Image (cartoon, rainbow, N blue to C red; front, side):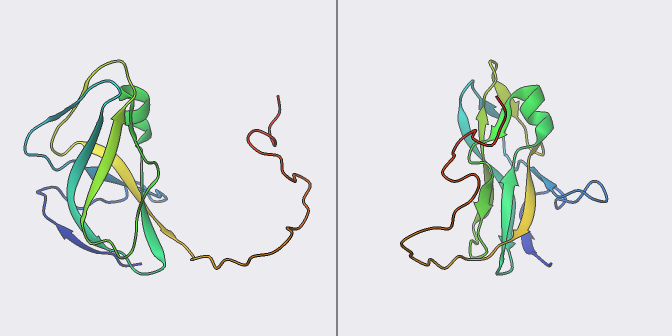
Length: 144
């Protein structure tokens, strides 16, 4: 799959770091550091503009290291970038730690994963087929 990209940042394009990696790290593109207070939210630009092929989306996901070490995570995870969006890729971060976190230009802030999707067609019916699970909801398939 080819993704067209305009990179307005001085940072290299995201790349896969291992042979079987699903995601590529996104970097902050900032003119000055951004402080994120406890429970604060920020929108961090990346300097990247994408043209994703139809039938695909880009998913913006947290970096596990940032989440566990600094309490930073992607607020709307996973965030979806649709194939028809042409604006700058930005990452909505939230600080869930008990300390302020500072993000600097070039910091790895999230990862991006590309995924194929299909658009659904609704079919209205009067009844759904039976399953073993039935109407069991949250936690109904786990053990207590």
